[in-house]
Length: 368
Ligand code: TRP
Image (cartoon, rainbow, N blue to C red; front, side, top):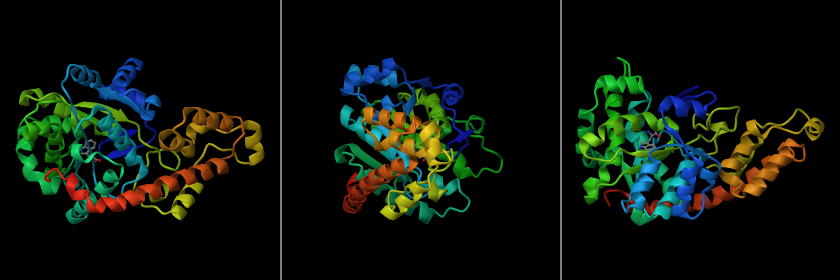
């Protein structure tokens, strides 16, 4: 297994990541504390799609004492958005609503340019604005949502980026990110830019509050170095809550835009969705007769994972589907058909909102 901010390969062992990265598992107790504030337990917490954290307890302590927090997450605009990207964004929106907090969302067109030899800056920048449409389509609250486009907004970020960069040595950066002698300077400096939104709220409002970052766990190295230097700059350490990756439709591995046939993009049309889901890897048996007799294996089935992550909100119905699968009462074709319908319905609604977002995108810009 390889899990770095730039590469995720192999079967991800989340327990091992908690140990190796030194994060905390999300306990029952912490989930209860969340629900004390939110009223119920979000699907992504209930099903442990968010499974690990740093300092979520501290953020809740402060919140209960009247010190708010801000949310921060982001997107590296290397290509179009697929439904795996939406998973943490949906949870972020929920937190924004329940806690009435601000969200800073960073579009890292600079990062995607420097880390890829082939990338052109004009393309990653264009993709940043395109990806923002998907974010806005999810319904984030306008007053509380501030999108940062790194290249366009660098003047706003640069002073804080310098304060951060000055306090991180090359040897720390090497140890954290595995930088080599051949790594370009843009890439080496970039982590300072990704740290900035953890702290920018103070510059904009004068309020010193912690940032809570919902993100996939591959981003953790960035926050490790940011946490080390935060107190030196007079800020709270950024807290995090980490989600699992939505698997792709193939065998193992996360959903990845570089394997377009195993990823559902937010702009896919119904025919495309149907074809991709139809070709998905499942836990089914070789023949219908065998499956009726022996049952199938939802644990390894990509189709089942989509119900779990996004497309079956009802826990009872999800359990029932799982039971039916194991006992041979439902066939892969049935699940694929149900899933296709749900994805198509979700996307047709999303695509309308995405088009509408073209006229409002400017209102979400941090420099509005
Ligand atoms: N580096 C992230 C990526 O490649 C983008 C990003 C920037 C981000 N800031 C973030 C992701 C904060 C999560 C949280 O996708």
